[in-house]
Length: 101
Image (cartoon, rainbow, N blue to C red; front, side):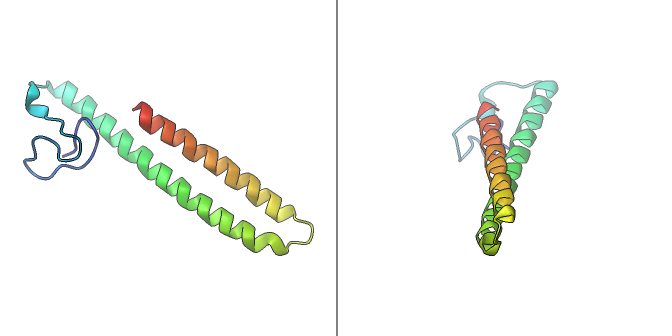
């Protein structure tokens, strides 16, 4: 089970959430409300995973860009730098979406 407030995984029987202090026992939830919260939490987890993957990819592209410095025309290096900037923008967008959720 995951916290409806912060999306962190909860230990069995945890109330309130050890990460943010949210207590779901504060009021009865309908099953549709619970389902919506579960969907939001799943979207948050997916967005975090996407952001992590994009960050890893950005680091790899930067590493390749350093290796491509031996390219005499610099064509490969420019293409890799451009890809790295696009990935960084994607990471920023995912981070913005996580905060919005």
